[in-house]
Image (cartoon, rainbow over all chains, first blue to last red; front, side, top):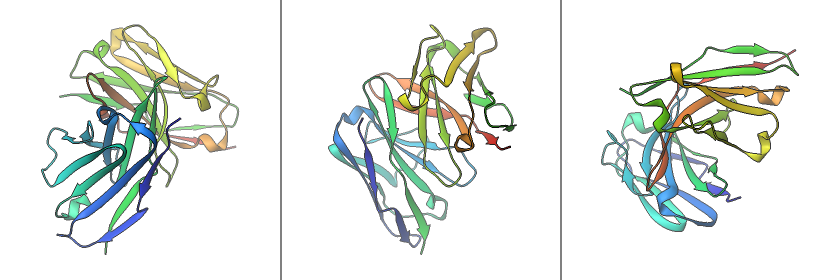
Length: 109
Length: 120
């Protein structure tokens, strides 16, 4: 089973700053099967990025995804107040099986 | 518009079973697999399994094998997740999610979540 590790666990930033979130896999992951989700308190997760770098419908262009193999990054170019949330990466492996990373919390500094 | 609407909160005793429903609308129910994901309070997301509404085929995470059953009723576009032999550690919010499985794989729509509380 592929294990996803996200860092940092918590990112404390101010609105307008750039956020860089990392997702590392214990084995190589196909970029086609790597997604990022945002979750706010009391809400279901929301798809942000799929296929490692494709933004989901309606997602602002300040969100971007990159990476391949075992290292992936979600970047928020300029944090807006509504971006403070928890972010999860997800991968699909064989079986089929999905796994999620433990999440990165982006909070207000 | 695509919607997944889940059943309401449940309180169960240890050893009991719970069945959560997920009603789909705004798309052809049999065209997309449904996955179930749970989240304990303050914890991360845990994938439980998937179901193909067209064939009824399922795949479960090893952790839940033997305890989880995913079914569907295509006439009412509803998916179900039943978890048996409940224990306190099963207290969580359970989500259904639509799986897009084309050239890229991801969950594009999620239900609102169903809180299941296991307590004596």
